[in-house]
Structure formats: C-alpha cells, structure tokens
Length: 513
Image 1 (cartoon, rainbow, N blue to C red):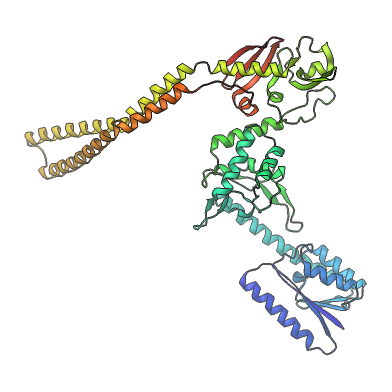
Image 2: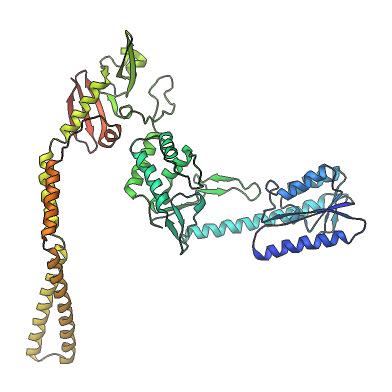
C-alpha cells in the first residue's frame, strides 16, 4: 500500500520547528517499519495556518497525487493538523473516500475507510475550528490593547522613506525621503497622479519594493499616508474572521487609534494638510452638464485655467476650445454652459482668445506685485530689527531678575539691622543670591556681546538690501504652476475685463486688450 504522511506547524518559532522535524522523522520511520506499506512521501507545510488550504502548497500537492491515484493511504497526527476548518476537513475526507483513499488520524484513532459515520470527524473538526477562533480573538484583543497603549508597528518593506533604526524605531532614509517630498511638491504644483508617475519613471526613481514602474494608486496612498507627517493611525483595516482571513477597510466598524508626533516627519504638517485639502477638492469635482449632473468630474492638470476660470454671469467654469476657420486654428476659452446649452442659460458670456487672456492675467499679477518699493522698505526694516534685537527678550529678563536680587538683598540688610532674624539662615540666603547674581551677570555680558552687529553681519545686511532693491518683481511668461499657487479664482466680467482673486482675498481687475 502506497502511504503518504502529512504534517504541519502553524508558526516558525523554534519550539514548533523542533516539532516539525520530529514529525517528519517519526513518520519516515513509522511507515518504513511496516512491510506492507511503501513510503510515497512526507508532505509538510511549515509556518502555515490550518484554517485555509489555499496557501498550503504541500497539502495541495498531496491531494493532486491522490487524485492521480499515486497514493492509497494518508496518515496524519490529528484532525487539527489536517485542517482547522470543519468544512474543509469533511470535504477533503469525502473526496479521498470516494477515490478509495483512507485518512488515518492517529490522535483520534480514526480511519475514514472503516468508519460508518462522519460524526466524529465533524465533532473533532469543530473543536479544532473553535480553538482557532479562540486563538484569533486572543490575538485580536492583544493587538487592540497594543493600539490603545500607542504601540506602533511599521511595515518597512511597503513604506517608502523610512527604515528600521538601530534602536528599533523608524529612521528616515534620505534618498527615499526626497522622493516622498518630490511627490508632495509635484501634487501641490498641480500635477495629476499620472503626471507624477511619468516624472518618477523618467527620473528612474525606484518604489519601496525597488521597482521602476509606479502606479497611480501607490502615489495616492503616499499622499494620504499620515506617517509622513510623523503620525500613526492604527487599525485602518481588520481581518473579518480567522477562516477566510479576509481583510477589509475599517469604515467605523472598529475603533481606530491615532498617535501624533510618533516619529520624525518627512513632510511638514502644513504641506501635509494642504495636500489633504487638495485631494478632497479634486475628488469633489462634478461635471457641469444636465446630461450627467451627478457624475464625478475629473481633475485636469494640463491647464491651470481649467480649474480657475469661471463665468462672471452664471458661475460655470470655462473650457479650452480650438476654433478652426479658413485653415487656421485658434485657441479660445468659452463658458461650458454657453457651449452646451447656447444663450438659454448664459446669454452674455464672452469668448476670449487664450493669448489675450494670458496677457491680462500676467498684467494682474504684476499689478499685485507693484508694491515692490513698499515690500523692500518693510523687509529692510524687519531684517535690521532682527539683527539689532537678537536675544533682547532674554537680556530684559535677566536684567529684571538682577533688580529683584538687589531688592531682596537690601530687605535682608534691613532685617539684620533690626536684630530680629536667624543670622545663619540669612548667611546661607546671601550666599545663594550672590552665586545667582554672578551667574546671571556673566550670561548678560555674553548676550550683550553677541548682540552687537559685527562688520561682517552689516556687510551681509547691505548685500541683502541691495538684492531686494535690484530684484524685479515682474512676471513675463504665463506659468501654470505659479498661477495655481497665487490665484484662487478668475472671473470673466466682460469681453474686455476679468477679475483676478488672489489667495488671501486680494482682488485685481485687469483689462483684456
């Protein structure tokens, strides 16, 4: 009879490794000692859970050999070694029994070929499954307790920018951290996920798993990951049960735990917050069309005006359109409502040539920066005051404390003169005040010395002022990235005028020539 043995251990811990090796040695000897048996093979899965058969490669190989009529009998230690899932256990036992192949469970003393009922297998299988479920609940409870205590675990293999430090805590990897910062910068500059993907691949930048090909979902997950700002949000996903091992997103079914300032950040909090706002803004875009009024719109990174230019009459965004007449092409911007519905909803929105529109926007930006002389004057005053006032607060604080010490000493002299005091205690207090006075006096002298503007510092100040005075605050060419950074919205008021609203609320009207 061709006999095979199956053994399994669920973890790779040292004590179970010993059990694993012992099982293999035992079954090899056990089968070879029986003259009527011929050893086909020892099938052994190491460090694999028994609740599912999907990942148990040796178990599946053994079943295939059984189906190919290469095995007559399977022997295993117990039902829990064979399967911790009652359904799987019964299903495979039935399959093998139909093929005329028996399974011997040593611990339970069951031979499936000689038994008349599946009741005992189902019973022991249920016990094994219940044990797995109990272990699973204990593990889940332990993990949640660790979450509540703020213990954070990092999956470094999937986390770009961090590596495990010598002290076991996350450490920033400089090269990968630059990649993360580049992704955040490009996104805030208006690049789409696809554009960022193309930039990274063209630069030859590698992913956390050392691949050259990036995908948009990976870039999106980096932008949303709170770990890059130094925080850690735990239990974002959870396993539904120990049988299917299905992992689902936590949408409020279980509590989540946020640990702020857990580790060194790669991006500052302001940048991270602005990225989250931009993600929300892009995902909330809607199509401007009666035909698909509730459809999700798409963010366009190609032209900044697609996001910013709106009709001053109906409030609908403008769209970039190509006109062709007499063999000549011309780029214009038109109100979407006027394009799709004609004059019915928007009778007065003008069509504007792109070239003229760009010139009007550049003129508005230069108008915005026309206060160059005021800016230079304010900067000069502020920089000068910074140089002059370094350490002033600390100097004032020390001087005030020295005055307090002097007053306290005078009070003590008056007390001694009156004769109603403990001289030993006063001697001790005098000594303490004297030592503090000496220390503060030395510190004050050092701060005043540092506070003097040296010739070298003055030269640097003069150089900065010269640069400010010579700097030309004037935009000459239309720049999509700069436009996005500066401008909140542009309203088309008429054929000859637009209103540019800058971030911060400042408004400038600009004429279209």
